Length: 243
Image (tube, rainbow, N blue to C red; front, side):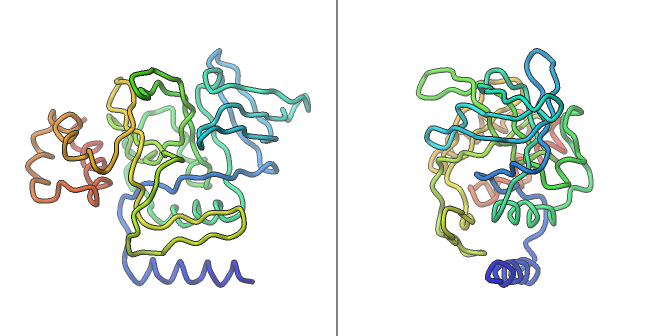
């Protein structure tokens, strides 16, 4: 009952405030072990199964245990063994995914490999990507937050990011579940084929030219709105106009 009241309140705030447009999806922490997950391994093997366990360190996935649907066997997989995967959020994180679907994407500008159907069903999309962490290159399995407009620029969820105390839906803590509020202070950014890196809010101004310098139209269009609060608009414009 409390969940339904909370859900109604959240939708009311969203609709009344008109927060529509191209937004990043919510990052998810908890995933269903009852709904099918779809994994593609780096060797090309396709796996359909059910998430049994996810081991993390500082929020980042270290190992996934999945029970294959066909064989009933459990497989333990490291991020470097997985090319990409679609897994379904559970509980309150599932509600976040449902809320995110109101940000419908009329024109997808993403890689052809992305399954639009899974995304619109509420699945989270993860892919393995190389990331620079303190001068060390690592392979991480990260959730893509802009699947509908990721051509040329991918933004990944940073599960260890702190958040601003911005006005909006607000932050709610319910047991072991977390509903995010405010704006994350960091993301993992990947431009084209470059190695991804963690981008902090405090460094966004310094990285502006590195990210968007090859698109004069964007530099001109947002010359008065270059701040972190417009980051989603910057990425959406870049994906649609600069590629």
